[in-house]
Length: 106
Image: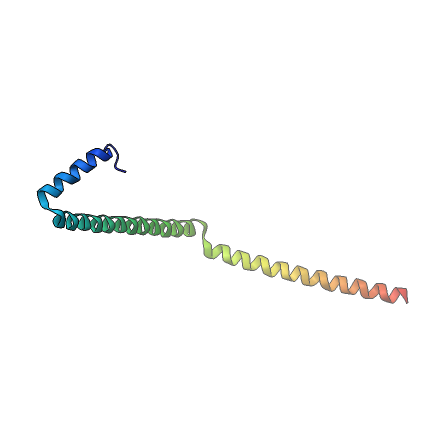
């Protein structure tokens, strides 16, 4: 339950509150306290999310600047083009060799 407060102490405090304010007023105060705590909890989570999102966006921008994402994309595309050309040449060479083999077997 609450740290440092036993069940007996909690019942005594509740009894005193009932005597001072009455059951209707105590229930209103408890409801208001619950709503307030809920709002504080939601606001705290929103702040955590906002801070986390902003930090991630800033870190991403810094990394992109440091490694030069645009330059990496260009290099990647150039390498892919070279690989495609090499595979095309190898396929052509393989086709020529297999064609020669079929001619020599005849």
